[in-house]
Amino acid sequence: MIVYLFFLLAVLAIASALAMIINKNVVNSALFLVINMVSLAGIYLLLNAQFLAIIQILVYAGAIMVLFLFVIMLLNVQDEEKLFDKFRVKYFVAFLLGVAVTGQIFYSIAGVADMLPAISEKMSYIGTVEAVGDVLYTKYLLPLEMTAILLTAAVVGALMVAQHKIKKA
Amino acid sequence: MIEIDWFLGLSAIMFTIGIIGVLIRRNAIVVFMCVELMLNAVNLSLVSFSSYHGNIDGQILVFFALAVAAAEAVIGLAIIIAIYRNNLTVDVSKINLLRW
Picture 1 (cartoon, rainbow over the protein chains, first blue to last red):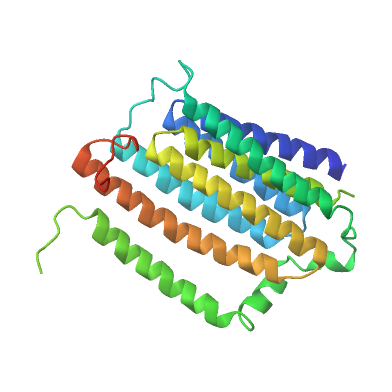
Picture 2 (picture 1 turned 180 degrees about the vertical axis):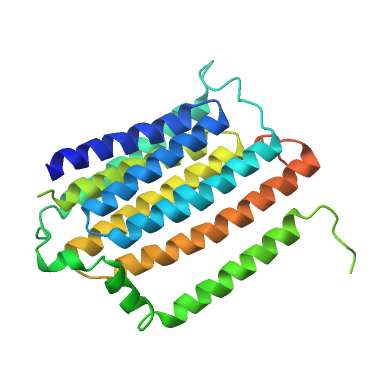
């Protein structure tokens, strides 16, 4: 059952990622990326990472993708007309590079295959909100506070970069 | 039960699709979305290693990576808006402001 669910979600994720990069319309690309994020959240659930699955949907599929769609609508971007109409050396080089990277990663995965045991009953509780929060607010308290500062700095920086008139100091 | 290799393989394929997207697309927003896709692929392999080792630290790292990705998306989109305001394009092959 879990195996079928995994393959369904994996095929959905790969298909939506491919559809994202070959779609001419930017809004459609963004919506395909949302499908990809949601299927990844399902895969996180299969991996017993419940907290991260919810965070993935809330932050990525919710907040970040809404921001992307907002910017797309704001800029009124036209479709790319010439995406695959003629053969370009660029596409060929990109495809070769992609195949090289995939081959390298699969080679290194195959070298260490079957070295980890399956998820046992005891391990299936590490991804709950309680477990994550327990570690996050004790052992990783300083990085958490630094994240808060980083997000504040990002908001201020975005306001400064995107503001219409930059006042002379 | 599924072996960890399947999760790592899915992560590798998604990372590759992200790389190809960054290389072939010219719209800056789509390039940016492909970068997000690559970040997600790496997050998937971190979560799968964390689950199969029974160690929470990988998931904490993914949490921080998510926060940094949110900050990065905000700044990157602000830069795209600023470039669009000056050049009236988001085509990365026409943006040559910093080209020597």
